[in-house]
Length: 516
Image (cartoon, rainbow, N blue to C red):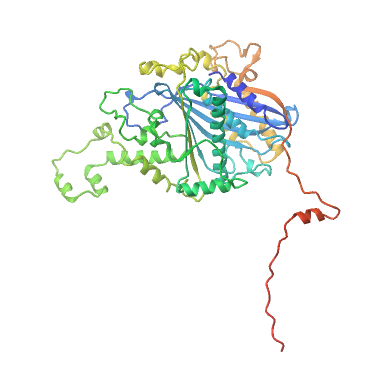
């Protein structure tokens, strides 16, 4: 998957923004690398675990009313992570953070929503999706700023409340599914091939379905219910029949530890641990508790679980005691189920602090026809070792335009040390970050590495690496956003006064004192 194709796709969608402005798009993508932290507490042995690959995405958009580079100001940013599991033909797209500075050019539209929709369409459209099975997940939690420090101080930034943020994400994901359904119906895909199966889930911990629907309805400006063909299920996605495809399963079907298809899903094998996610923190605590109980002496373990006294008497001094090696080898499944896990999630600090938080999941279940391109579907009969190396088969081509993962982390750290509290500070911060990205990319070769032996020169076809693959400058010339019509005033404002409804103010009626 070439980074230049992703950049062209984003530029094409951002050109439809209203108003007239100049934009600069930065697309920072890391190469595929092996990942062991997605399911760190899995019960599957190390040799039987399928390969998981990780790829980091950081998209930055700057805007200015003119073509002057010194007037450029960062307005939107998206941080996402793509996890690929070739043996299961599945991919997980986690939207980590989305933020804006609120310093949009007057009359032009904010590119935040368009940027998120365009990136998600890249991961879900048939020609560019990373695998036949794609799951998009995110955790909505209202904050003043996510990626741009002090951006909430700027008066132009409109910080959404907790309910309105959940409403915004639900509308964005609904529009994504509706767009794909419209394109499928227009092209007649349903009549010639298997139609795309979309399943959408959302869950607000500690809220019932009626409460969630009521809050989302009131979050809209008109207060009207949604009119859409997309069906949302108020539940977590791990109880669905296809959820096993997005988890980690043993590559050996005949081993003793492999569970049959009808067995309940293990939370450590099917709930991923994303960064800065409350589910991950809860899983870490459960794993630490299970490990402490497994390594504890048998008598303390029985006392902790309030076992029957007759059982404790049966254990004498001659009874065998578990050793640390035996307890670690016989790792047991967690003592809670999927439903209990989510029930206890409602009492976590991030979900019970008074603010509404939401878990959103969109699953795309569509088999992709086998082709000879970058997105070919391998036969399930292939061995795991061959399928696990599928992302690396065209490494030299797929990594063109990528930058190393530590470099992406360094740019993220630099972004967190800047100040976007005012327009002047934001423009200065944009220049500093742009120069930092240029300086880091100048040392890259065509393969996206800093190895001097990979390429003897620092240029690619006469153009530097930054201009060739990372940044793209373009202009937007569209009709401006419609402004709200203000009421027309007469000579003394009589028209506006007549249009405004009369307000009756009740005064306190004092009791008259009797005459002396």
